[in-house]
Image (cartoon, rainbow, N blue to C red; front, side, top):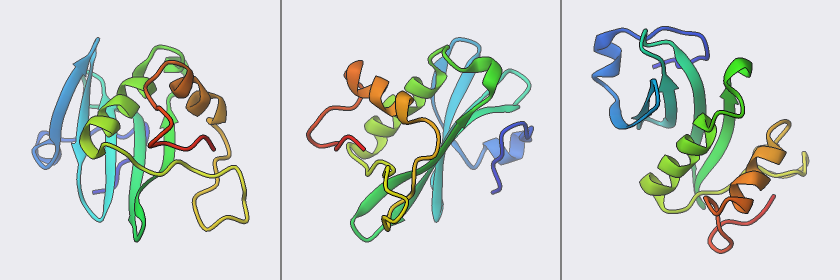
Length: 129
């Protein structure tokens, strides 16, 4: 299934996903396929925030993350990261080195650091990028 910010999902598409929790006016879902997603939708099934996870030889890795600009700072991303920790226990974070074999974190480094500061991500098992 192709999940993109701003895309509205049908009821039949949502049936392929697991509802993880409610967060205010949003529902957080998990789609476990070759590429896994944890995403938030509003009451009209519009994808407002989406985090993409890839299965690598050395574990699950957070590959991409995005939240609509108008919703940033409201806690949706942190709720999604919390659910990712609940689903996998631990996962690899994007790298700050664009020559690395892992995904390069272009935006969101401050967000990742704030997740450490708030105790959502802890070292160990997570390594700060």
